Length: 284
Ligand code: MN
Image (cartoon, rainbow, N blue to C red; front, side, top):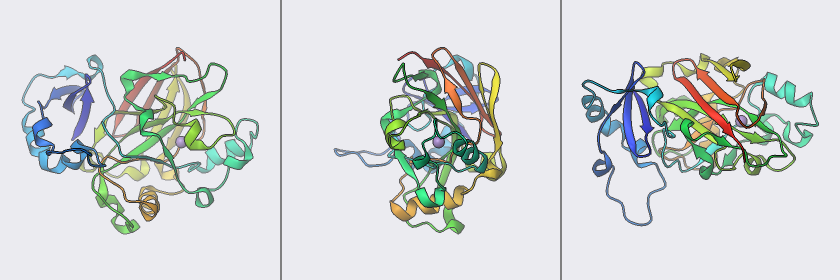
């Protein structure tokens, strides 16, 4: 199943490039008072609502290109991200100490994971507003894993069972000396989309081709088989340090080919089995 959020508040199922409205689910997401739970209400109820959502898809639909695609996760509790998790990206970073300060170029086994502000999350339709005119902002395409159930200290052998689905993530990054979480958390610097693909629909996520183009020219081309820490290892590592909740997102790291974007650029990211996310870079 492919689930999208679109036109601000709507939820849809995507089939053959067409978005089908599943109707108003707000009454079925549980009754909550203040404070709200730490998880995403829709992702937490996905299994229970699945039949109902699929049943709502009978005919019609709108081309996905004609809707405003929002982040497939509306309220992620946290964005966990992997630094340098492809060997060739490590090599390109190590070779350019001016752009990639040495302090940041370390093995993921040494540096662990980092967190991005949830306020940085947008969908493809929002575009990326550059935060500073005078600093370099780079694209990073990544496979994004969305957690489906509350879990802690998950062994690698059970890790795939906590996954709700996958989407494409753009981990937009200001280059510089500051902490990653600071440089990668401006508003709009985490683009998720175009939709969530459930594990049964995607199949094996450990060998997916991915590309990122800027204005039609390929910048990044890689395969998830080259991840240093694979998805089970990342889930196990993250959950060893904190509880993961439905809707938490793990950005698995970017391959080689990162580079600068400027206002007006169109970023087109494709991951095999998921689809294509297109978004535009905007002036500060
Ligand atoms: Mn990244």
